[in-house]
Amino acid sequence: MANTYYTAETSFNGEFDDVEDFVLEDDDNTSRERLNQINDLMQKGNKAFRDNRLEDSITCYSKALGLKPGDPIILSNRSAAFTRISTFLKNRSAADSEYRPVNGLDPTTHAELALKDAEKAINIRSNSAKSYFLKASALILLERYADAHETLLCGLHIDPLRRSFALFSNHLQVSLRNLEAISGGSTRRIEHGKPQRTDDFDCTVCLKLLFEPITTPCGHSFCRGCLFQSMDHGNKCPMCRTVLFISPRTCSISVTLNNIIQKNFPAEYAERKSENETLSNMGVHLLPLFVMDVVLPCQKLSLNIFEPRYRLMVRRIMEGNHRMGMVVIDSATGSIADFACEVEITECEPLPDGRFYLEVEGRRRCRILRSWDQDGYRVAEVEWVQDIGPLQGTREWEDLQATTSDAADLACSLIRCAKDAARADRRSRRSAVLQAERMPGPQDPELFSFWLVNLVNLRPSERLDLLRLRDSRQRIQRGLVHLKAQEQGCSVQ
Ligand SMILES: [Zn+2]
Ligand SMILES: [Zn+2]
Image (cartoon, rainbow, N blue to C red; front, side, top):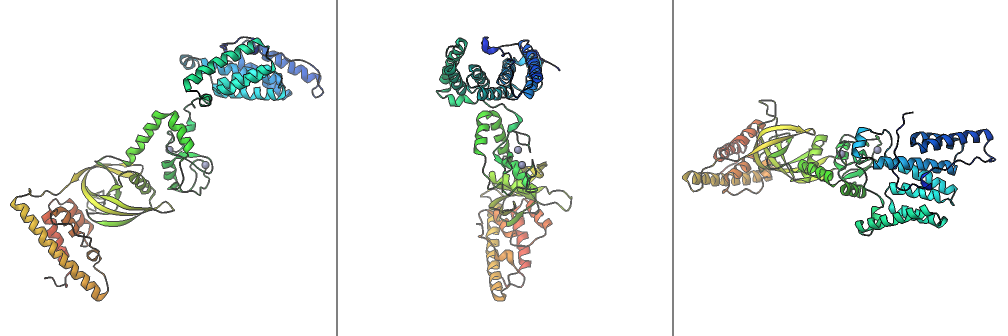
């Protein structure tokens, strides 16, 4: 067996640091032959221990325990060997561990094994100070100082005359007082050391530190966002495939787990947090895109979001500024159009099955500079676009104001007319006109022009042209032409 030679670095070399010899005495349950076997194993084990071949010693003790389970001497010797390995691993310098890595278990696991053996030994042989000493040593390695102190006091109670024991206890008391001073008087707080940053705190979906963890009924923990994303595709635990009857939307974050992570890995947690915030608050020139139809400023529409990638997008948007871009596939090129419209989600109703019902309203236009894929949906870098109008106070500006006012008057009478007609024949075919929202004032010709063109039904290519157009007057004129054509038959004064 490959063996590592351990250098003993325990600070108290006394009788407690050594192992006990096995006492060969007849007992009713064990045959003579078996006792001899155990005795051999114990002698080999103790020799290995004293030579610091600790893995060998543990192998011998474990075999002996197989022949005589629950023997307190074997248990306490094995506990001593585990303790010594744990101490060695703990005190080893970083350079050493890189140069000569020890395969297998870490110091904490060894200390836990030492603690288990010591506790079993105490249960069987409660009058042995040695077992208490071993238990206390393991607890110190586990940084459970207050428990270690209590254990030593128990041992002292059993055997107050043992000098080395008292010495050890005194030493521990001094250390405890120092630790208390540092930690502000609470030994409870230092009882459990800082957890090591192991994979245990990683989300198995994104393989990063858990962020806003949710623990499923099957006991697995995932980032809230990751669980959501996974459940967009089916209601199974991403880890064990148990069918989950939960909705991540109504599931609370595991507060304790979240606190542990936040307190122990603050830097990594902050990084995860900002990472998540960038996904929902992308900055002024980045816009997540919903590829569906041309939307114009002022336009209102309802959307049903069912595709998993858009569910994810909507969740992120709702954590941020509630805005996304709407864009059409340009039939001329077969790829997304060069112009899009930013819409604001004015209402967002999450449905129990994970879908969303949205009401959106077009806000401002943008030109898409470039776009890329992010978690299945498209994100674009955009440049905000406005009409190029005449300077305020010039004649052209006054002309545009006049055109806008005239168009507004005309539109109002058309709407009135359409409403009368609808009342007369009780059918409402001219729905866009009938549902006309409050008209924007003529002082903003661009906004007005979009309100106007939203009154008429246009083909997507025509709408895309209107989105690209940067001239309010032209847009108003085009709107009026279509409106008049659409409302033919209705008398206009
Ligand atoms: Zn995750
Ligand atoms: Zn599971």
